[in-house]
Each structure stands twice: as structure tokens, then as C-alpha cells.
Length: 280
Image (cartoon, rainbow, N blue to C red; front, side, top):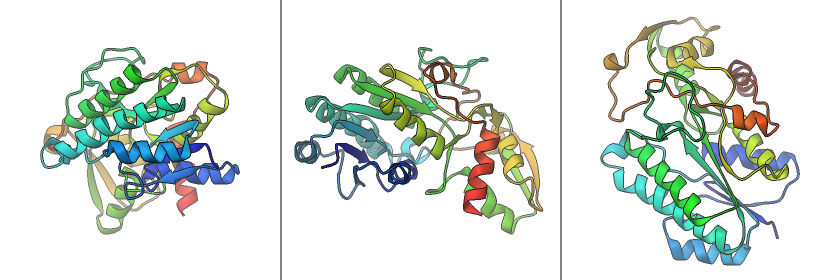
């Protein structure tokens, strides 16, 4: 019986993590929302009782950031806050180590420098508030946990900015992308590798921040994605591209703690190159 349990198994990160574990010959049991409704406390308790996992990779999340502001507000809170609390309590009951994925949206994006792991949080959108509540539930419930904040996630197995840009470039000769939001892109492969690294190397429990190295604006990211395509990309301000949910303007999270633990993430440009090569 596998002693690793994965939630959100069919999502962008959950799928990437399953492929990584498969490649390494590591057994696990993985569930999507149909197989395990994390908002149902009794269902979670029953599943954990059957498996009694030693490691829980909690990849399940509500990620529709703009919908979370209104029509998806309740679902956002139920999944990201209450669901995470249910998972944390069950993991704690069986002495499991929990890996919880959080977000740069726990910060308000007003910091001129990098955000350290212990920087003051101040989420400005509903998604960030719910994910922070999830963090707090993990800290209050458990001792054996890794909270991993990430940002600007892209990968092979879900909807993301890279796929959007590539799709639009097929039907447009000119695109506009915001140039006043700065952050760190994250390849799901890099994130999955660090999740496994943390467990296998038994690094110190606590909060970490993991993205690919370097930083850029969304405009800069788009230019790199489309540099070999026959399309022009122009910068615009966030005011010219209004969205329901507030986006942090400057959410570069420090990678210092991850590097000190012995993991060296590749640059976002290298990650993007490897990803584009993989899907070509």
C-alpha cells in the first residue's frame, strides 16, 4: 500500500507530480475532486483512515482568481481554507508530513524588494485571503509540514499563461500584455521536484518560497514565449487591462531559503525553454 497521498491529482501540478513520481518508480495514491472531496470532512477522514499516509502532497485548490471575487467566493473559501483545514487535521491524526502549496497573492505587492518567507502578509484579493487562511490552518494544526508559496505557474497539464500566449499568437499579429506587474514564473516540473526534494532530504519543516530563478513582467514573459513567433507584443498598464481581482504589482519572493536547503532552481528562461521543447 502506497504511503503517499496526493490531492488535486488531475490538476496542473498534481498531474506533473504524478508523472515525476512515476518516472522515479515511487508509489502513491492520487485523487481528484471526484475521488476525494476535500471540503467533506467525513470523506477526508474515511480516505485517510483507509490509507494512513505518511506523506500528503496537497495540490487541490480553487484557482479561478477572478471568479473568487464574486460567484466563486464561497467555493474558493470552502476549498482553499476549509478544505485545507480538513486535510491538515487528517494528516496530523496519522502523523503524516503535509506539503501545502500557497501563493504570492498572500502579499500585497507593494514591497520594492524581495519578500522573505517571514515578511508581513496582506492579501488584497479573495483568493489570496483563502490561501493564507489555508496556511494558518496548517500552522495551527501541524508540526510536520512544508508550506510552499509559488507564483505565475505554467506547465504541460493545464491552462496557463504560456498556452494562452501561444494560442493567441496563432490568430493575432499583435498582442498587448501588462508591463507593470513583476514576479517570478514557475514551471510545474520545478515545483514538483522541490516538493519531492523536501520530503526525500528531510529539510527543516516550515514555510518556503519556490519559483524559477530570475524575475520579469508579464510583458517580458510574453516576449520570451513568443520570440520565435511572427507576432508583435506591446506593453500596457494594468489600468488598460482591468480584472476583477487585484494583482500584486511587485511580488518577487525570495528563493534564499530554498537555496540554503540545497535546492537550486533553474532560471525561468531555461525552464520555459525546456517546457516549450517538451510540448513541441
